[in-house]
Image (cartoon, rainbow over all chains, first blue to last red; front, side, top):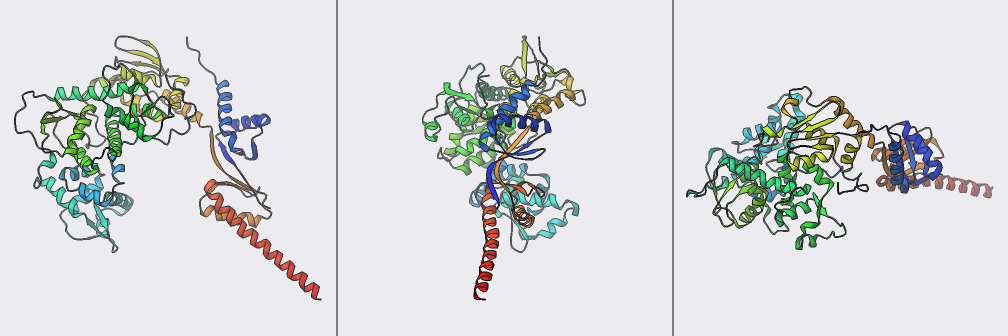
Length: 68
Length: 493
């Protein structure tokens, strides 16, 4: 029987982001279905949290030139 | 920066600055349009706002008092430009200048026809273009003074917005406008009822919003129009007549800089407006009760299109030098320009006539968080580039421009949209049918035939769900009925 599930479709720009999302999912379990390389279907409540965490992880991994 | 804007990051992009009056006009009713067109100055101003092809059509139709078949108009242009013809005609329909009847014939509004003609040949109602004062002004002012006055008044408002150097607080009317337009907001956002906005505006409580930051990066003409459009939106609340207000604005656009005009020929509504516009520096009046007023350059350039580059201060408008290493040198001592730069530059040092800064990832990100786009930053840098920079081709170093764009793209790693996921379709045909159905309504966000999964939008969900129920439900019930019939038959035997 067909199932309909409410949630949010997330489209990511590159596989890097996707793998970060999978990593985050291990801890928070928000992914409902992993669709393909650039799409995942998640619990819509988690979207803001995902954005925040992703932003932080990406930020930590950015090289910054230190200005004197 | 005073403002922390984490929660509003994502919804600011849709709220852009509205600086185009023709978009506002399209909301009016036919009656309002025909009343507007009774003023020759308005007809001329609207004519000037139109694209070239539309102007051409108007000129050709101006003296034709009959319906003109659409094919004839199309025949005036080469066939490959039919799209452009349609676009121009659409504009004319929307502004109620032309109407198309059921036989595909075009007719121009009589009122518009007559009054544009009056504007061109100078006949008919003369006060439409403002009536010049008959007496000689004892306190005559020259164009330089008007330019200075206009710029000062206008910049005072902008200064107030960035909170720099408040020598003079803007008038309550201006403050209301700033708040209503969403360029500034009260510090505590709890009070959101419309009524309180009008009864009490405490100037100490206002602070600039994201929209306000974007506003600062626009050119003056867009800024002025954005303000005036907000004013037009408020007209009903102020119990003013929209048509009179519009007529006056368009009239201002056709006045002559440096000439003085009589207040007496204006309607009471328009005299009230005069007072509000005075505070913005759009017009100059020596005293409140004065019988004459002077339009400033802000007024006379209102309807000259977006080509308002001939600002009074052409020389010092270019003051920014940007190096390939993202360092920026700005030759300015204006607190306004420095505050604007501060939106997206880390300022390192300040001297008497210049500031030195640096464009960094963090500085650009903070600007982006305020809802400013990379394009706005780049356009601002380009238009204010130092004359020495303007000799380069391209004007700005490509490395820096690209980097700013990359930093913007980097923020949009995720796109999310709420929706419904349909999966576990029993049969491939069922899936294909549902998919086709959903595609008709353009509600499919993602689909995969192999996995038999599709995601539809929130709006599409109701339709798709109903379809599935009807379609698959009916199939099952018909199967069910068949089985029952077979059982009955078997029982009889």
